[in-house]
Image (cartoon, rainbow over all chains, first blue to last red; front, side, top):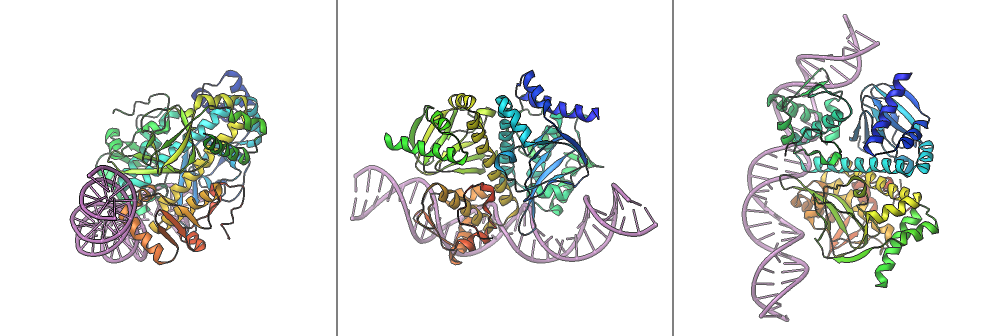
Length: 249
Length: 249
DNA sequence: CGTAACTTTGATTAGTATCAAAAATGGTGG
DNA sequence: CCACCATTTTTGATACTAATCAAAGTTACG
C-alpha cells in the first residue's frame, strides 16, 4: 500500500528534519523493515507486564499509554499522535510496565528493536536523535507531573488541551483551531488525575466561558489566549525548534 | 583530592556495571575532565530558564529538580542521589526549564556536555548507557505521575519513601532500614502535590501505625512490608538488574 | 430498534487545602 | 553555654475542591 509507506517516510522525514540527519541517515532509516497495521480504538499495542521487541510509529490516529493500579484506578501517562515514535526505550530497559492502546482507530508501523539498534550502531546520529526523542518524552512527563501535582482541575484541563492542540498543529495543517478529539471524558480524567464527573462539569464551565467547544468529537478552541492563560501553559517543554505562533508572552 | 576522585570513579563504575561497558569504555569515561565542588543545602546547580552546558554527577548528598509555576507553587520533579547522572539530556534539548538545587550539603562533579558527547561519539556503547539512563528517568517520572495522579496522600508518601529507600540501598550499604532524610515536610509536599500541613498529619499516622519513624533527619523503616503495601509500591519501574530483596509478591 | 457507551445532572461526602498560631529545633554570635 | 533568630514541625478550626453514588439523558452503532 503506497499510501501507508508514504506516511511512514513522512514520519521519518520528521525525525530527520528535527535532528538535522543526513540523507544517508535518512536512507538508512528507510531500510528498516516494518509492518503496518490498522487497529481499532481500544486495541492493545502492548499489555502491562508483557515484554515486546517492537517499537511503534504512529501514522494516523492517536494512542495512549496507561497504567492500572492495584485498586483498579488508571493513570494515563502519555498520548501519542502522528509521527510519534513510541516505545523505543523499552529496547533499552527490557521492560515497560504499562499498556499502550489505540485511542481512536489508528494506523501503526511496527519496527523491531533489533533492527533499529542495528541501524543506530552504524549511524550514531540516529541514536542521538532517538535519545533526544526520549529526552523530550521525559520533559513532557515532567510537565505532566507539574500539571497534575500543582494545578486545579480547570488549569489541568486547559493545559492538556493546549498541549494536544499544539502537538497536533505541528504535524498537520489544522483548520485554524479545530482538532480531532476522540478522547472520552473518562480518558481525560485518567490523564489528569480527576474523575469523569468532575471533568464533565469543568468542560461545561469552559464552554460557558467561551474558551472551547466540543462537538461530534471535534474540539474547537474559541479563544486560545484565554485558554492558554487558564492553563498557565507555556510550550517550551515541547522543545519545538520552530515557532508555532501560539505564544505571546 | 584523592577521596573525591574515588567517588567519581565509583559513580562511573556504577554506570559501567549497569550497562556492561568494557574496560576501554570505562577508561574513556575517566578521561573526561571534571570539576568537583561542595555545595550547601539549597544551592542552585541550575536555574529555571538558564541554559547550561554542564551535567552533574552526584557524589554525596541529595539534589532535587523543581519547577515554579506562575502562581508561585512548586513541584519537585526529581530527587537525585549518589552516583546519579543528572542533566545529561539538556545537552540534547538545549533547554531544561527547571531548577536543580542541593537538598542537603552535597558534593557534585561537573562535566561539560561537549566532553561527554565527544566520548560518546567514539564509544557508542557509552551513548547507549546514557540513553538508558534517560529512559529510566522517564520510567520513574511515569511512576511519579501515577503516584500523584491516582493515589491518596498516605499512599503517595509511603510510595515515595519506598522509592528513595530502595534507591539509596542500591548505592550504599545501609544499616538495615535507616536512611538519611534531609527532606523537610515542605519539600515532601512539593514532590507529591500535597501541602506541608497534610504531610505532617499523615506522617503522624504512619508513626502511630508503626510503619516508619523520623528522628533527627534519619528515617527508620519499621515495617517494610506494611509500608510497601500502604504505598502500593512495586520496584520494577526502577529497573534494577539485581534483586534488592525488598519485594515479596 | 435496541443496546452499550458516554455524557449530564443532582445530592452528598471525603479528602485535602487554607489560615493561623503555638511549639520545637537548629544554628549563630556573644 | 546562653539568648536569639529563622526554620521547621505540630496542632486546631474551617473552607472548599473534587470524589462518590445514583440515575436520567444522549449518542453511536450493529
